[in-house]
Length: 362
Image (cartoon, rainbow, N blue to C red; front, side):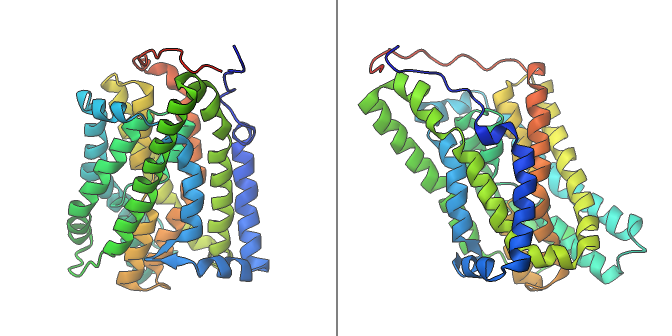
């Protein structure tokens, strides 16, 4: 075999990822509480409401998936567009409205005795901003953890970004009755470039160079497995940083953070279930169904937080609600990853990849 090997498929950190996530969340909060100068230092490196250190860590998370993207596979996605239809319908015709309904019900009815009406209105606004901004970057991580089709995921994210340009403002205006929604276009465009264009270009150039220099066999069986733990490490470091930024917020508002998290968590499970079951009903393969469920369930929190700050202020309850979306996303999405991987057998297998000549085998 000349040194070729198959990777185990599960890296060291992935084996106990839930434990590592809990430890890193706790470490981040403690860091923000007892060493606040550390998050303050990293928080200085921000442009257009996007944290550059977080962007670098997100590159670490999504690069291993981007190197698996075959440009020919992207061109072939249009031959089976059902997964894209599910993504579009769930993200834009269902998700914003279920988020509005759940937030309205919990903040104004269930938690009426715990949240004043003015606060409830602001929390509702923050929740709606999250619901109208489906995921751009982190979905690559969830897709990677479920062995999702890289090409399909890229197309799902890219088309989602195009729809955001046209649909985000009208949906927010309709649901909240806010006539002066200020979208920070620099945040939106910078996020697309940082989290889609740059890593996709880098990954595809890496793939092209390795295949040409070492062969397809080396790339598939050796090179990609060098990055088995990179996504998990990037995710864990991101958690430490994000939770250090929000350490004081978490410790200062524990009850309201919990109350806000309840409808956000229910919404996440609901949207995943709708998209995932739709893919099952349509008999789509698992490597398409899992990313389709994940992209709607997770949120483009950079955009939601930025718009909340622009509309209501950095210290507003609406901005706090969008921040809670950041805090709840990772642990909840990891639960959905486990659910997806545990139900993989319910879906048909993906069509086999075309065979490649064994040139360049090591």
